[in-house]
Length: 456
Image (cartoon, rainbow, N blue to C red; front, top):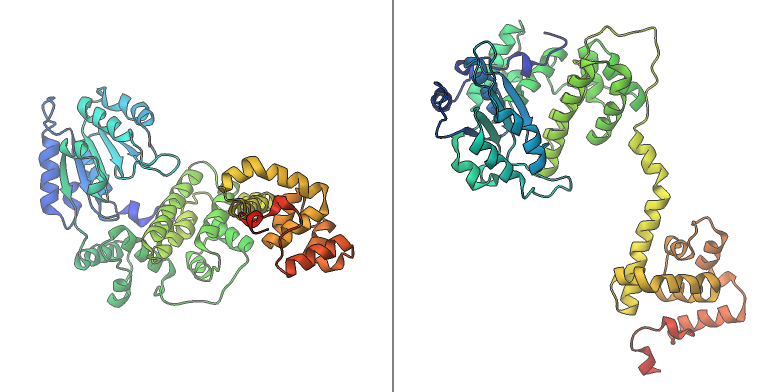
């Protein structure tokens, strides 16, 4: 097996006739592509391929481009989110024609048009308008893919030939996996091949069979080899024995998101040029599987994510490992940033909890409390420890909330005194404690609860 190319790429169908399981869909695709012959503008400028991930939608687009000798330009619509971005990136391509070696058409592929989100994670309101405008003026065939047809704008669907792909049967997936094993000169018991089949997802199944090939063991077999995060990351980038890396990855105790951060942080230290590009492509695929696991609650996707972020990244190496030079593995910068901002984040959380308590006490919103009344309360408490003690007793404040009021850290010696008021001896302090214990009205009218004045 090639050490630099994943099986999903190595055995991607090169022609439409090589795609299994959807002869009717292939016929529709050919009929739509033929409508662009002769230089005229067809009735449907685009085709929309609908179906779950891993069934061959993107592969069909590349195979079509190969069959009709169309150069292909691919965009991920979930990355190109806004009207302006779509018009700037895609617009110039579809509004001009290419004349090169007799080629008059070029194929534009827009992936995931059901995932048009802005930077804040909200559905983009104007991005569909850009796609509609592009479809109205395009001079080139456009292929769009989506997982959920109902999330695609109705006007976009009206301008497309819609092809719905069904999940591949286990028999079809098994046939593909056996063909790959034959081409790779590998032989495994059929029960081991069956364990690699991911229901309805050919791409994930090929990833599983690849792990089986490089490990030459059933995927259920485990090892007791464990490494620290630093040694584990070094193995990912320098290990030339895929069987050993397989064993190490099985015993990796880091969470998927942490593993992703450790590996992505060190890609540019160990790799160069195209290796970096390919490695980040594998990490992006792994991130999609992690997102799918979070959205669906199906954590089987974690296995697929691990395979891309570990085996996939390791297989991106093209140069020989330099054993002479030592490269120090870096801690993820995200961990450092979180550590540096720990105090600030804790202060923000403490102020938020404090705002809720004070707002309830004074019958106002937390926002109004922090923007108007809180500065006055803060000044009173800083100027007079008696005020701070009374407020602490009234609201049962913790050390972080007291620190937020006094605008200091929890290491301030005053905090310990307020958390242990019995240590204070003054008569005034003792009176406050006794009044609080006897549930009498506060000494300071400013801190009275609403309605206490009438009872008094």
